[in-house]
Image (tube, rainbow, N blue to C red; front, side, top):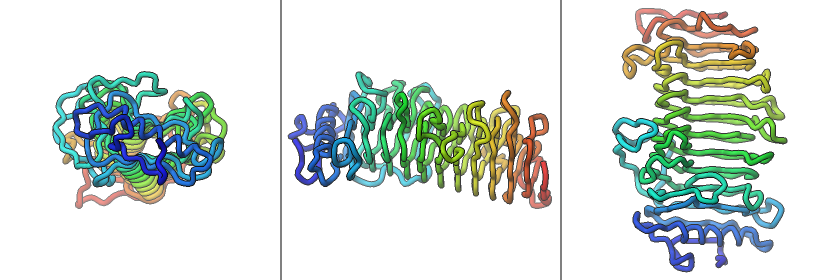
Length: 434
């Protein structure tokens, strides 16, 4: 049943009896009925408002994905106005700050995490949760594949807590296929224990991939796989914090094989912390119409197992630039061996302006990272260039890795300090070349 004012309360009894939000009742059918009504209204040719699906404060148990399909944003076949918004009542699920929680997180297991999260509207997949016929397993899915393109859909102030689903592989949120200008804001995903789980996943479907995605003020914590993963094109990611992930905090890729996709990805004020096996940010540089144009501004990392920032270009994406400004890697590379704050592989051109690397022996007794910057040809080719201007690069062993391939051309004008944590009794060196 369509609403005359574009407002759909999932607890309204007209939607399969209404969702209870009591943390016990399976609310899947009621919530999906409200979503379907909103989608149908947005698709009506006469629709002048978007569909706001409202979740009052509560815990909504689900046994299958909640799917938004085919809201074209005002009229069939075109984006004319707002799409469907899934809106959670109560306080913000997250403000982009530090995560909460105590205990040790081991990816692939459901034990060892005892955490308290703030109130609001929580989606809680149950122990019987199954993806069924959904296009991809996700607690909340914006599906631009099954029934056609979707546009301008949004999730706002919602939390996904996968603790009861055990090690079921899923994403907290997924944006899939031909999805244009979809957003996830003020949301959090916690306790997805499977090593194949992802906090937020952006996926292509055949020749179609999401475009214009916005992720803002989100917290992703205790994720067994990747915090944020996607084939991004023209995406904006700001104030997103990944913490205690099994794999990379951010896995940024390009869909260069799809027309009009790839590149122009901007990350601002993001944090990638405490990856158990990988890096805070792993950027596989996409080549799009603007040579990739991956930009990271004011981003930081802390205590990741491998690298703070790992940037690489494969054989199909040559001479692709990435720009980092005011980014800081702290105490990364806690594994033994050649660890670094920044690693650049393959034919990539990297520019670092006012960036930094710090050894953190308060958290890591052995001192990390071993190097501030490592470069490698990755069995393809050496980096095309490395431009380092300003900033302060500290490392436990040496500032620049000595045994790996140096860039073909580089400009360096920065301060460096090697040999351990910062000491007031020593003066950093002004480095002007590698």
